[in-house]
Length: 78
Length: 338
Image (cartoon, rainbow over all chains, first blue to last red; front, side, top):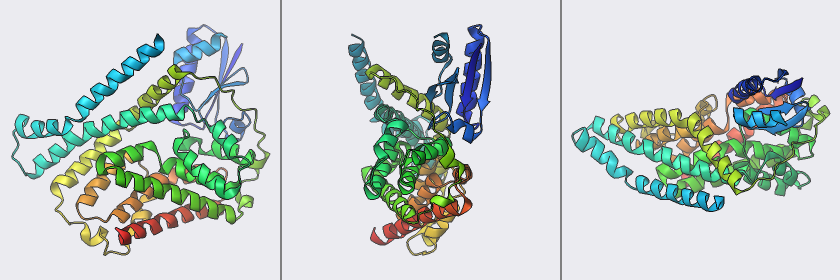
């Protein structure tokens, strides 16, 4: 079971990143949960300084970047 | 081999870019007066020529500069900027923060995490504000638009003045010792370990630049076109010196009025500058117009609302008040000196 979290307080990039991550995980046929973390205090606990950020299994992968599906797939495969 | 391929592709792209760019004025004239066969000197034809020439020109400049700045920005992450700024003394820190604000990637939606990240890492409050003022106000889009429409002197002036406001306002805010007006939870925020930085090579930097172009141009092109369309309308139809009476140097109240009008408005530089150009042509004073522009892109209501998450109302008002005062002073100074 993979745990995907999207950190961001609801900007358009954050929504797009969540969408891409969802599609990427589905296409890989993974078992996963996707959570959008929108509370700023919760976001800060991850130590990121730019949103949207992608967190996989509790580990911050990128911050401030809208990744495309291929890039997210690459990170999920590891 | 890959490097060679990229270099050749890049050179070919720049060459093609230059070839098209230097022929745009001729194209605008040809399109308006030959293809559409419009009469010389009419209102509509003057508006059409303005639009057909300025739109591709500004879009092309935007692509070039956003790409270049994207490459520069791949060297500056918020994490690295924070490392540079933490532990700097205040005055030096203010200057560095304002300069780094120009080159560090920033989006106003990230203002809060950035603020918390800076303050909890020991960057002084005033220094953090210098960064937060300069990052949105002095940006590559504003500079490229100003350069494209007014030349390097106005662009340079804008950059210098924007940096000055960021440095001085941040310094004053630091002197006011308003740390107690930050929401207390900010200081409790336990920052987790930062993102590991991937080693990035030149191919990665070029990709970063191309991503920036795709990202920014896809977002602002519509504002560019709308802005130029409005600008073209003013250019073609509003009589010369029409604005001189109430936006000219003589009207002393025009500078504060321009700032008051600009703060609630939120637009990016791409949309506002074609309008600014048209206003100037019709007799508005440069200081008034620059003040308006800085208020629109540097201070915005959405930003105030976002910052309210971490700053108590008094600090939000003080922050906006000091920056607005700085912009007004600069506006007057330009109107008097130029």
